[in-house]
Length: 379
Image (cartoon, rainbow, N blue to C red; front, top):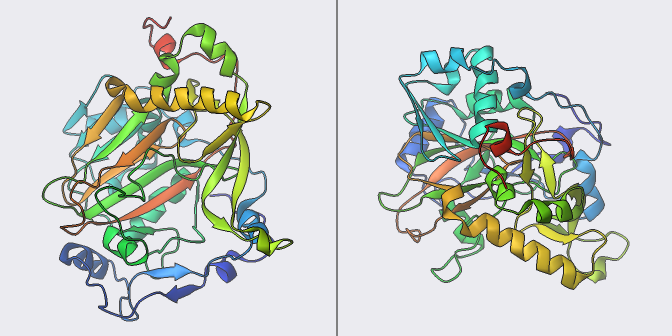
C-alpha cells in the first residue's frame, strides 16, 4: 500500500491506550479463542483505542494528500478462472448484488485469486465466505493488498494491530446505550469513510461471534440504484458534487466555542468504478450533507429522493444471515449497508474489520451503467 505523506509519523498518532481493564467486559469465548490463537496480547485489556484527535485540522490532516491507487480488480482476468476453479461453489444470492464463495480460505488466496476476488466484489458489490480460519493479522494483510489500510483515529482496534477495528456492540453500549427505538450505530443505511479524500474501497468484516437469531446485515447496490432513475433524471445529477461528512466530530482550533464540527469533503454523487467502468450512485442518508451549488430546499428534495431509491427498492438489496467465522467483503464505492439490531444485544456479537482506501472518486460521462454493460434494458 502507498503511505500517505503526513505531518507526523502515523505511529505517534495511533499510540495505543487501553480503554478498559482486563475482563471488565468479558470477551465472547469464540472471539477470545480466535485472538489467543493469533497471538494477540490480551494481558493489558481489550481492545485498544488510538489517542483521539481533539481538533478538526488534526483529524483532517491524518490523510489529506493526493495519492495513486491501482485497483486490484482492474488487473484481474475477467473470467476469474483461478478463483472460480478453486471454489466448491459460487452462489449468486440475488440478481443484482451478493455472491457467496464456498470452499476457499481467504488467507490462502494467491495474488491472482485476490485480483479476481476484487473484480468479483466490484461486479457483485459484496462477497461472502463462511467457515473462515483467519487471524486479525491475516485480515490486515489482505486489506493491504487492496490498498492503504485505514487506521481510524476514533475506533477501538485489536491490540498491536492498528487498522483492524473492533465491531463489538456490547462495547459500544458502554459508551452509548442502544434501544429498540433507537438502535443507533451501524443500524442505519450508510457508507464507510466518505469524508476521506480517498474514501473506502473494499471493507472486510469477519464475525467470529454472532447471535443465534437476528443480527443480519443488508447491502444495496449503487449500480442498480442509479439505473432505477430515469435517463432524464440521471442528466440532472451526472457530474454534480456533494458535501460528505465524517461520523465523528472535532473542535475548531480557531473557534473552540463554536461546538463540534465534522470533517467535510466534496465528491461526485455519481462515480465510476475503476475496475468495471460502471456508474454508481454515491450518496447515503447518514453522511451526504448537501449538493454543491443548490439551495438547501433543492438539495434536500433531490437527496431525499435518491436515498429513498437506494433504501426502498428491495429488489436491489441483499440481506445476509451470518454464521460464526464468516467474512463479508464489500465495496463501499458502490453500496450502502445497514446492520440489523433485532437481537437487541441479548446475545454477544463480535467481529474485526479492515477497510482499504481506494481512489479519489471520479465521474466519466461516457461510462455505461451496469445494466448497459450487461446488455440489459436500462431506460
